Image (cartoon, rainbow, N blue to C red):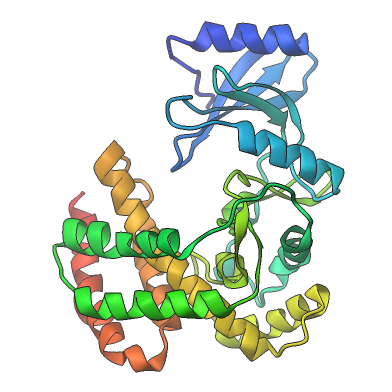
Length: 328
């Protein structure tokens, strides 16, 4: 069933798109609302083709970086949707429509191996090693603040549980381990929901507006430590051999796994805090259902010297979290 846009600025959008592209949008289909506040719509045109419009309230952010990065990725032949037109003043980009087939749609629980990730493993080194000008870099302060969101929003506010000292120790060790990793281009959200197949069955990267310079382990964690299925370390190690070969990294898969582990710890703490934060600030609870698997995978990758923290998270935090989610 098609969902029609019902907003005061609807006519402004349609008029702007029509003027720029020379097409009339006969139908507008709401696609998704992102945690960032970006809204996506499919524009069905008179010629039976379609495009995707992204709207971001200019008060919340700008498409400027996204447009600049898109132009670069196109020049470097890194598969990604081409931007057809944009109007930064009203917060609109119009992009190539990749269709509805995404890597996230594959039921990983029914897959015999992680071979479905091979295309993603092939794309990631190209993105990581590309010479992208004017790219900002992550710093320890930002990484630390993001990890603290787990304590503030997930534990303190959402569950009303305190684990302050143990999480502080974990955060501090994570910062040290991340600093010691190779740093390169970092999508910062390189997960299956942001990898879509185009009409030629080529896997493409989307939502790359947060691309920055950061630790190698964060994007590795994004694709291997999934929000929706359990971790299988042996299979991950096999695929990291492939990643190392494509990336020309002269290290073992165990070395790469350690980079992934600490990238996953930073990413896990950040996301465990971010989803309740979104709930508290916008009332959107649809992603809270992902928290149990995210927490399970987070516990799984914690080093053995955090045994007491793992036990606390598994035996006390998780039951309270499930109960809290069921009450919503």
